[in-house]
Image (cartoon, rainbow, N blue to C red; front, side, top):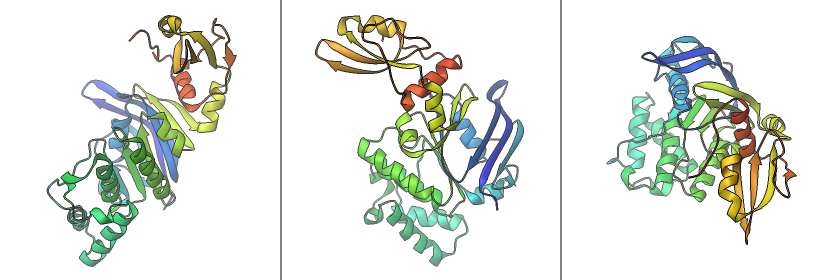
Length: 298
């Protein structure tokens, strides 16, 4: 069985409104990042891959299986949705065992697998807690366990770290990297830091279209020559935010060091061309493709 996802010219509509436009992607084994703003179409694409939505046209194969063969796709795919919830009054191990039974896993094997997964997601000591008693981060980790209960070839996770504290976010990202050593993992997020910490290959999505696909290093190179820093007086900051695309600010006494995305060198004092970071490269990608990324006065 080939370990890749191939998406060719996929379009999706909600009624008369088009949500996906000619999506073309090839996703190999390991961690793949899908980066985009809220409303970019990421969840629609993820649900289409998880056979929860039907495409209008185009072709998708997952590990060589056409997406139209939904039962076979579900057997090799695990999905953690953004709005994950499961059996709040069940204990963690009971909920996982129940899902395992629904997947057709024999009872003895299912119990072993549940214990192994709870250990892997660092929840084994909480196995007898009710799901509703878990913290947000614990629930997301339990969500990974439920998505892996049938040992899928593909794991799809949609905005998994939104709302988590920094410690839980790091723990969750590390868990995903570990899981991705054995399968295809697609991480859909609007949080640049999650992509930067976990993914080598990424795609950037906006308004239902793929704007960029390639490696993190390639998108950094694409932004080279377009990221600047300048030291400005605080009193000019609001005006600068109106005139330029500001991606970062560091206050120092009466001055602020601003990080700016620009096609040309900003007409500001002490302007220095700077090595791009992923956030700046992402914003430059949106800007260069005609997306509105202006901040303006808040």
